[in-house]
Length: 260
Length: 153
Image: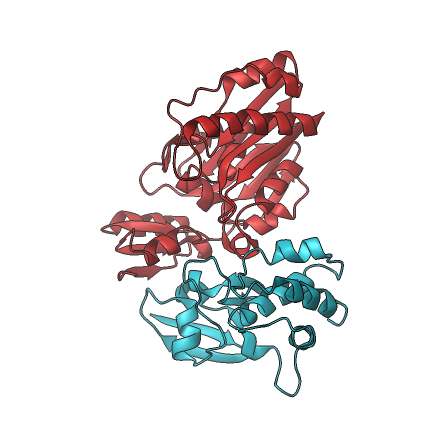
């Protein structure tokens, strides 16, 4: 690792001030992405600002049909919660037990890794990302490869999820890393069907053509014949863009089948 | 920067560079070399310790993140003449070959059993050890040992 200055601020104001003052700052949440990145010298921040000392950033609370999850809540805690079973299953499939003991919801979504699991839920569920500045609709949060709607110095503090009538997450994990080669969350809210896709494109998105087909006929067979546009999909040694497009359909079918 | 950590019950106050990893504090500063560095890329689990009672990969934790915390390493769970039940089960079930992964396996297994209420089956143990690699591929006896130990913990 290159040298950096480590800070553990105790208030949001202090944290954002550190970021503004830093030559090149990096927020540290659980560190499951940032620390390996630092160790490989793929990043060289002058200042690492650890958010774990901020109060009130961790925990799960339920108010009516809204589940609010603090940004510093570890994956293991979400996995053990029965508030939204599909979200618990998603969290329980991230990385391995040790990663889930450290990695956080806020850290995962702020990174907008195209192969992360949580982004599928952010776009598929009716969600609101709350930050040090204000709320951002979940559907507007991811804007590009490792890019989000967060402004300079802005810190995710929590995410609100409206409890869906039903939801299921299916993923095709990379056998070594357990990152999603493709992951699909299908959620039903009243008559609406939402299909959130991660892993396939540069950032998580909703597959609107699949949603329309499933809104008309909520059955696995409805997915057949719906074209998934793979023109901007990821292609790497693990899967071609065409294969990822195929997986979007297969995983959507599996999720729909589970929801009966 | 200065950090305060309690390791295996002993309080330490240490001055370390800001970019120090917890595993290096344990091995280089405190001489606790039972915690191993295998892959150094958060994958193999040879460096697993308990941080405030939870299994973590200490190669992927900064020293500053452990400031104020309690850490338990493989040296802190038993003695040669009084092995932890998990250590005893590993010995009895031939759950180690070269032994390099063993400290991480044992620290992961203890955390898994402590959080399971003693109802782990083979599939749950294999899933729980997802983040621990044994390059001798001796998993079968490791799983047997964890299942045996859960009845004695």
